[in-house]
Image (cartoon, rainbow, N blue to C red):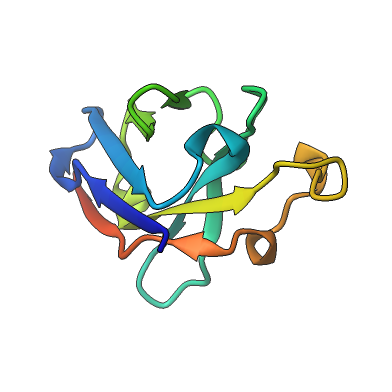
Amino acid sequence: QVQLVESGGGPAQAGGSLRLSCAASGMIFRLNDMAWYRQAPGNLRELVAIITVGGSTRYGDSVKDRFTISRDNARNRVFLQMNSLKPEDTAVYYCAARVSASIEAHIPIANMKERDFTSWGQGTHVTVSS
């Protein structure tokens, strides 16, 4: 059974930093594309960042140049380094995974959608105050 557990959320000041971590189990981590999504109150869930099995990355427009996604296959973890935080970054942040173990399962990173990710964590809250 796949399990994704996020940690590292909490309060932060505008201009500050937080580092989120997602621990994965029940899966072959290195064969999964990983992503961070977020959902603010009253809003739809939106893409934050994706990292593929090959290490390619893609970011949502609102976080480019401020957030960095990375993965540690040896520790079955994906990270999100968030710098220059803004109050509008306040949201629940979710870790997500999709298996990419074959040519048939491959999706170009530019074409990946939320619905392509089949495993989700419970989320971690991030609150940024001005």
